[in-house]
Image (tube, rainbow, N blue to C red; front, top):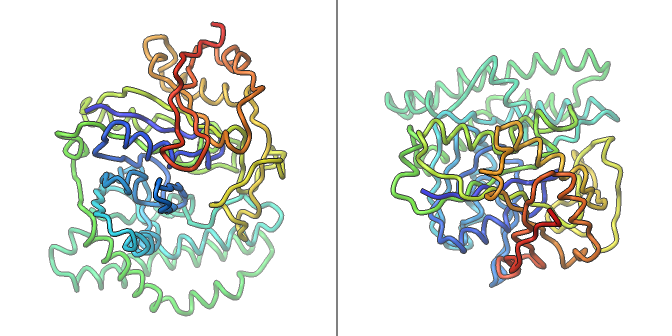
Length: 407
């Protein structure tokens, strides 16, 4: 099976949903793989007919009927998943979602813990989106929850499983977060907010509702034990990355990062695990003609930028206003080089498969951009292979000429 890898080159919001949708059409793809992150993703797809959705779990090939595989590196959120599936009903498309039962599950309490900690940090916000990704991974060290163990209980009976989830697993996770927030509250010298205390008082009711959300997800996804099975007899997969290289847990400006490998690392791990069940035919790093940042990060200096706008990332209490700044080619080149070097792909044998996609050229044109400087910083010739001057797949153009930027 052939594949294309879509990776955000900046701080997220680069246009990965747009490029995934375009590539699914170009290659008649029959699988989209979510290989990192979780429900905090907000990948916007607008069809040529004007249909619009911001995808969190389901892959951005949905409007073309392309099924989704949520790999073990994707963090599941039954609350967000159920809401998204309800929203997608309006489009009347078939929606097959394959899931690794090893994926960690975000609970209501992980999201609550995430939000309370951000509130108690005050001016020292990490810039979280409030969906509980980091909180889930921290909690999982003490009390993991995934569909592999849920399914074992379901085999006994649905009632046994529901009671076990409610009385054992979720009760323990609730207790874990109550104790963690008590400690965090003492360190911050601030009380746990009243709204959170009220939630703990309603713990049994909340856990019952969350069991319903888990039950819905359990019954509407297709579990895949061996990832190589989902790749079998497929033509072309698009691996849809989440967030961006500047937010990678190892490359980014800690602690203003996501607990995720946002580059190609997870794809290479899946390739090894599946014994080369797929080839990597192109690696596409995506950037707008400018940079955006939603969430706190003192190293990102920016605000408004003439011509730049975003319809998806609205102001919220966790991330504030989205900010903009000019595209910094030095930093863009560094991020791409680091991702390739860190994964032993910094060689000419691989470089002919590495491509650059630039979006939002209708907002800020490419005229005057110094691509020679980008290539000199990168020390490799990466072609500007795709550019988009609008929101839909029809607005994506493949460059007719092969840019070598003077190399």
